[in-house]
Length: 513
Image (tube, rainbow, N blue to C red):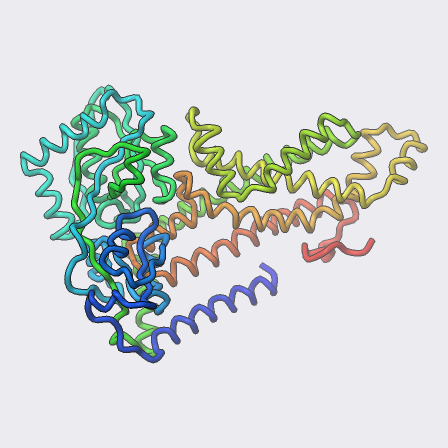
């Protein structure tokens, strides 16, 4: 890793430390002490995107401003930092967060409305006959025999995160693909590296009752309903609330749980000094990496991120080079197709391209999220390689080819022996920059059920309710991974480009010829 990268990394860490310390030691305001105080102009209340809480806030606190949040962890941190005044949501989630050590926030007394109804969502494209009816029949049985009450006691009251032994189906008649999130304790989360939770247990019990093998696929909440609509999963067990909008597009089973809704606000008496802040960092480090061997989740995420990145670089380089060679001699059809594809790829946000490929183009195939991610980033990297080669070859000049022809070189030999080696000296700095951009862009693959480094960080945050170490760790790891890949490319470059010296271009710019 170069000096500039190290300095930037140190600056980021020091800035984060300073910001956290200042937030903890700063002056405290009077704060909100009751639900009634939320109904005031200027009060900002956070709610989860596409949930029933937004309607509850508008009904009970019409004078407040609704702020939509991506996830619980970010919302809790926003409350602690004073960015929003309150967060309205699943009261059980918030009670567990406080039980697990969440600081600088507190839960207001009382509940809001009648609660949210959670249920299983059924894919309209499932191949299992009458899946909704089968789920409802199963829920009725475990409700009547007391199994559901026992589960609620264990997961909700005793907070026992141990998954019971559930026998797998022998000679399964079906294969049940279940969508879940892994980030909503105690419904679906990770403990000791294992996917556990109230909804996960229901899904496993249902698969055993149905006589089906079971497979869990992990999505962000934004992508989990599209996964069912596209047929990637048969059903969803993820503490998914029944809303009028969702009911217009997907069917729900009978309720699995009714979630009480509460409000969390900033704890104005929770300021700590510098010593307390250092102690909290040590505790946060332990919860993030040591407890339950959570470092293994980061290691697994690193492996997935590297796999997608390396394969995309290799395939993208080959595809981009092949496309350039097809267009090099001015073939009109090849150039028209290449221009259109590059225009389409470059004009589309990465996450949109990824979701189109996963939920539309390859929805009928058995391709995994990792495979689709490699395809998406291969196309993106190939477009960059094509443009880089086009600019690099143009910088060499047509006279080089003419001189080669006069010496008796064939077109192919002249290009590979004379033009390409010179063009690569112009291309390599941009090529390395594209690698850095690519590895950072892979952070969106969680939208298509891929558990990469960023997704694993979210999973850890969902258990620790700590933002600092998971996010800083992810940032540091991306720095290191990018540095390793660039180091490897530099080594290859020394051998591939004649006359290239070790102290020549470091990727910051093109050296003078």
